[in-house]
Image 1 (cartoon, rainbow, N blue to C red):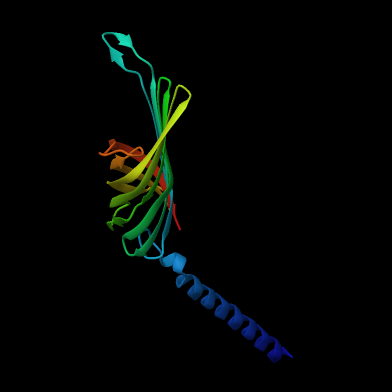
Image 2 (image 1 turned 180 degrees about the horizontal axis):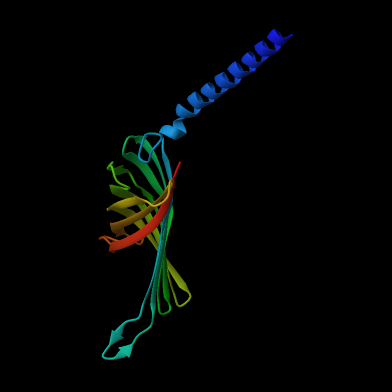
Length: 201
């Protein structure tokens, strides 16, 4: 009986040791443990939002406030190290000046390259191309226009948490908004600075 008891203890100890070694091997080989930002297969989700209120002053007299709000959601997938295929699926820009409000809806493809560094900061460059539609509302009437938009963005992504990135960038867009029958380009050239937040999985 004593020998049987010692054998049982040895078997249990061996099983516990085998289980521990197996578990450590599984965790060591887990893809999640090996993943880092900007590696192939990583998904990035988030976006940016800006709001500006401006009151013009001329000759000491103040004018009506002008409000500008922009929301730009983002989703991206890294196909290879550093190279990301992104999409701004439902960008919104609202510009209000007096009794005139302009609402723009944007859908932009956003391929980007993220430069790996040994620090917490990842510089990036991004191309932007897609469609913009606009509705201008004034005195109860609405005028619509649409067209092709393209441009680019450059900036940095800073890892402020384990899976969270603070994104700071400068963006330029060449926006075409032609009403029906327009013979030449109408629209705007837009230069903006923005900050946003993304998470990666």
